[in-house]
Each structure stands twice: as C-alpha cells, then as structure tokens.
Image 1 (cartoon, one colour):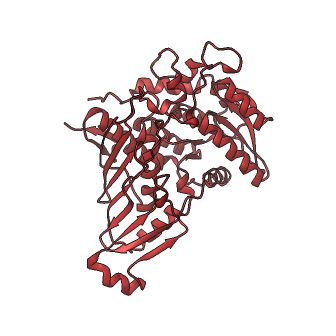
Image 2 (cartoon, one colour):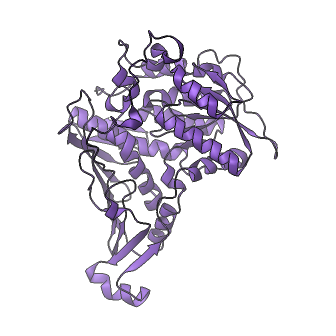
Image 3 (cartoon, helix red, strand yellow):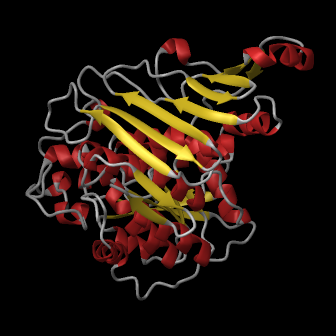
Amino acid sequence: MESSSHISRRNFMKAATLGGAALAAAPAWGRVLGANDRINVGLIGIGSRGSDHLDLLLQHRENKPDIEIVALCDVYQKRLNVAARKAPGAKTYVHHQEVLQRSDIDVVFIVTPDHWHAPITLAAMESGKDVYVEKPMTHTVEESKVVAHRAKELKRVVQVGVQGLSWNRWHKIHEIIQSGMIGQVVAVQGTYSRNAPGGDWNSDYWVIDPAASPDATGEEHIDWKQWLGSAPPMPFNADRFFRFRKYWDYSGGISTDLHYHVVAPFHVGVANDFPTRVAGMGGLWIYNDGREVPDTFLTAADYPGKYSMTIQSSQVNENGPMMMIRGTKATIHLSDEWEGPPSRQYDYADIFPESPFAEEFVKKYGNDQVRVDGIGNEGDLKHVDNFLDCVRSRQQPNCHADLGYKVSVTTDLSVRSYRNGKIYYFDAEREQVVEKG
C-alpha cells in the first residue's frame, strides 16, 4: 500500500524533468579545475537561509580568494536585487534551469524549499556540477535513494547542509565510542527545541512582504508557477511562499528541518547505518495559524547496531530531553546540538560511569567523571569550507550523499508514521520502505 506522503515514480520523474529542463545542450561533465583556478559558484534560492549562504561564501572569499560567485537565482525579484548588490559581478536568474546550462559553473548551492532539492540536485549533477544542498537532502526517501546512487555514478561531490558535522564535536565523540570507553551503545537521545512566542517559522527571519505576488510588477514580482514546480497547483499564498516549512507539500516540518540536525550527528558519532524501523508522533498543540505540520514532535528509531534513538522536540518549549549517548559502561552527557535553554549551551561533554563499572572507570581514567572540552558550536563556515576543499580534492565531504540518504530514511519515515498512524520498516538490503499493518 502506498502512503499518502509517498511520492510516486511518475511525479518524481516529472519533478526531475522540471529541475533539468532545457539541459540537453549542457555538457555531462565538469570543468577540470587547475590548482590556481577559481571555483565558479551559482547560488539557487536567496531567501533568508540563502542570504546566509551568500554571506558565508563572501566570507570564504575574503579568507581564501579561490572562488567567484557568478550566478544568483531566485523566483522573487527583490531578493535577486538585494543579493546582486552584495555580489555585483554575478549574473541574476529567475529560473535555475538557465543557471545549470552554464558550463563555466563548477558548483551550485541549493537553498530552496525541500520539494525542489532532489530535482535541482539531480539536474546539477547531470550537467557536471558539484552540489551543496541544504538539509534535508531531499523531500522523500525515494528521492534520496536516486540522488545518492546518481552522485556515486557521476562521481559528483555532494554536501548536505548539516553544519555540525564539520565541527570537532562528533568526530571526538566517535573516537570516544570506538575506544570502548562507554561500552556498547544501547540508546541515544536528543532534541532540537525552541520557543518562539509569535509562532516558529513566523519570525522576522520568515517575514512576509505584503506587496509581493505573481501579479506585482518590478521587484515585487514572484514567479509562483516556477516556485511550485511539481507541487500541487494552487493560487498564490504568501504564507506558503514565505513560510513554506509549515506545509507538507514543501517540507516535513520539525522532523526534516530540525531533527535532521540531530539524526545526522548520531550517524557519525555511533558509526550508524539505515534504521530498521521508525515511528513518529506528536501534534499541533498550540499553533493555530493555518499550518499543517505539528509544533511538538517525536522521532523514534531502531538501528541494526542494536540500539534505539529518540529525538523529542517542541517549538513551544525550549527544554527538550538532555542530549545523551547511553552505553553499557558509561553515558555521555552533551549540550544541546542547536539552540535550547542557555544553561545547556556549552562546549564540553561529561562522561559518567554506570554504577556496576564505576570502580573500573575510576581505576582507568583517574576520576568518576571525565570532561571532554572543545566540542561546541563552531559555526557554519567550516561546512562550506569543507565542501569547497572537497570540490578540489574529490574527497567525500563531511555530510555526503550516502549519509544524507540514511538520515532521510529516518526523518521522512517519521513524518509518514505521524501522518499515517503506522510504524515503517526499512529493508536496507533491497533499499525499500516496508509498511506493516
């Protein structure tokens, strides 16, 4: 049985075609970069987060002038005008298909609504470009499978925007776990919680321009049809355009936007694989502003490494469960991965032994508590730098397409579980979603 949120192969191929329309004339290979060549960058999507990426790219260029921003793309003309003033040498576009036709562009940054991630990523790779795509890597599991396999076939560098994976934090945690210090991992838990009185995704970061519409002229014009792409056709809706994360057609809500930032690090820290089964639950308990996605959400998953994961988040209370990795011999206590209460924003981890192993722990480590410093938030630029370094070296970046695929299985299936009231299983050998009951 196909769930209501399952994207059909026909619709996905339609979306992929929309993403790469008119690419026949573009070469299916990348420009060969010399040691001193600058990397030519195209930025697709310049809303709030896209503007952040433009600033990061400009910051990278100040530190290391090895890139050139040559193309800026957005369906909203005002955003293009603002971005062009920051990067005056770049050519502006309303349709990303025209950006992808340019053979002189080496990489694209994709910062669009989620339903466009897979089509544009696939079209970009086919045209010989490497890709930095914001999380989630794709809107659905099925799309992630196609993107991951195609990236490998085409030998493209794909970085998914989970910035924390370029910090020291999770690489240190991985080393601790591999050392055997905490024994066998049996459970991990985390959160990404915040409390925005005006309603999360309604803040000034997601401000609505009341003059903007498809009927407006000049810089207030929006190409609504282009923005919708393969999403269900409907009349222009400013809330959907400016605050798309509130709607299922373009986003998975808390799970794919916020939980992705927690699931991915656990994959690195615990050396994880695809989940075996996933459940999602929660509800729209407080917000009554027309949104479809829940304001409080729980993702639960079991993994073949014989441990369970729970991530419980809310947008109306910032105090989620303590971030922990629980082993048979000791437990790692961590600060919140992102945001949360000020009391839990620190740059260290504390490791405490389990009672049966306390004496052994003290004998081996000299104390009944071990503190590991230097594992806090290091910002977003390191992730951009890691991607651009890999574009030259052709190495795998810190959140590559295979990892993005594994994370998407958990986050997308938790959404399906919530929406359909079922537990979902994943057959890793056949790479298929299995629905029972």
